[in-house]
Length: 632
Image 1 (tube, rainbow, N blue to C red):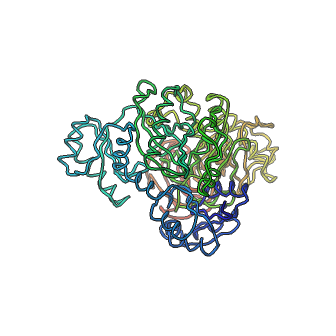
Image 2 (cartoon, rainbow, N blue to C red):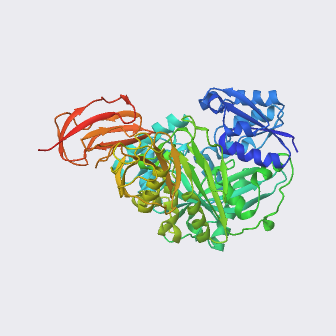
Image 3 (tube, helix red, strand yellow):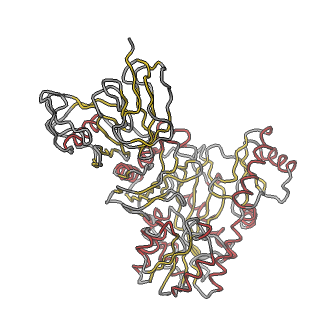
């Protein structure tokens, strides 16, 4: 066994590989870009080497720099992780030529499965069922259009070198084929430098079933059962589970046998995944599952396979790469219980799932589940890399128990000010269709309206108001009988605010009036912020809570009609102008703060008197941004 390993990757996969390496007594070496200088994977390694600027092409994708780092640190082996250089046959050859151990499949296997059209031809020769379609050399419009008509619409056009949904177009009718083809070819050329495509029959209710396979240099190939990765949004996986729901013994044998044949056809060694597409219109059937592609590396979702088999797949990678036989034979690999994984992305579902970047000022994940992550509190989520920041993995006796446990774990996620998809994932896991196993790759698109995060609950609002009030610094009003007794403009309410029975709050930019409570319901987790604000965490969502600068009906509105900034920020929109008539609740100024937009609305019907700032201006907390004069 080699004594040191360099992981040519970053984030959670580097941390994951290091965990097994440490347990096995193997020295760990990290590489990092300038953007990752303070990243968790750098601190967790025994040694780390800076290899270039933030852009991946100048650091993590630069094979020469990675190999130089391995030489400088005396690394004996290189683990590529997944993504970046993990399926680059030239890199694998360069690693081996440098006298290092390559922890991955032979370069020839990578090349054989690297192009979708060539891989499908190879699978046909190996007796592996493939999706009906065309993967020929002719790429002219006339030939491809004729093949699409032969296959029958709808069809799927796919870039032969594609991945991640790029270069993929669904075409429903012949009249749209030419445009769909041109679009797929352009994206294939742009993303992969290869405009060639193949055409497949489009499966109307597809499920994404994949089989974990493993081979060694002694001629053995085994499978470690299947995973279902059908819950996807724009071809990116969100929830994965093992085994696949609705998979009977006969269908499992058919698909796992096909996966083993596929691996043997390319003399595969190490960890790999054979991906299949299943027609789920009438349940999973052995004759309705077809080969789609092979990933010649470890997968993001490998923890669910580890959970149901008890196997450490990274340890197996190390042992097989070192020339050892696989630790278990097929008959000895167990299948126990059910496992599920949720991918936690730094993205804002309420804003079109846009990536959310910046500093993780607060980062709390559940403690009773497996967490694979490459970030920590105080760290940065960079614009340069994938927005996945963690994986939450559970294992239970049954699928129902696993779904319930993972939903509960997602509900406990606390991240601020970065936005995440935790609440979205929780809603997926709790959806009746998912719970019943009625899933396909179109599930999220079909059910998206039901998957939106819920607003802060009534009890959660009352809790937030209570915590905001009790967290405030005491102050004394000039009028002891005022309902604002104890009000402090920069901090909020104090605990014994006297005559008022309600509190006026701004919750994620919207005004709310909340009954005052002496004791909380304790249904939320609360994080005090500076400048008189707090964050309520409930069911995986984060809600910023602020008190009004004055008592009023609109967000940030005073009773005299002045609209004040509830926090420092930037003006991003002024939907109206001075002199315009407005109605109560109509947005007047939109402020961007903490990467969120907050609409300041008219507190009553009236006329806009003044807008004091222009779009792009930075403003401080409690600044008067506009005024509204009451209608006569």
